[in-house]
Length: 114
Image: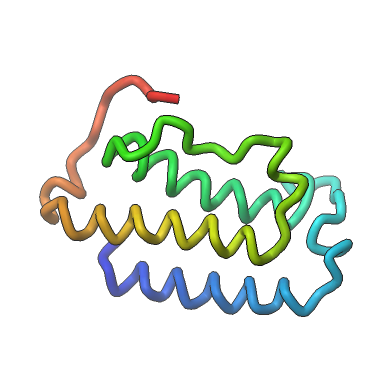
């Protein structure tokens, strides 16, 4: 993925979060079976945590605790999810700025730090 493609990811994510602000909070956090994650909110937080974990922790060594604690997860609304994605975007931006194209496409093998 390059920076232009990631900008499209951010735009479509922002559209989705705008929609989530329009739905009822109960729908955003409603437990759903067969969805892979208990709710829309939990799925979105998992996606942000993946960016923070793999890029922020695994590649950039910027954080040792990349995952959102479950006790905090249940308090999160759309605004907090947006903030989590803003953190992940900062890591992705740093990833693009500090690693060359070759480095970004090199397989990394090491122990997961969390």
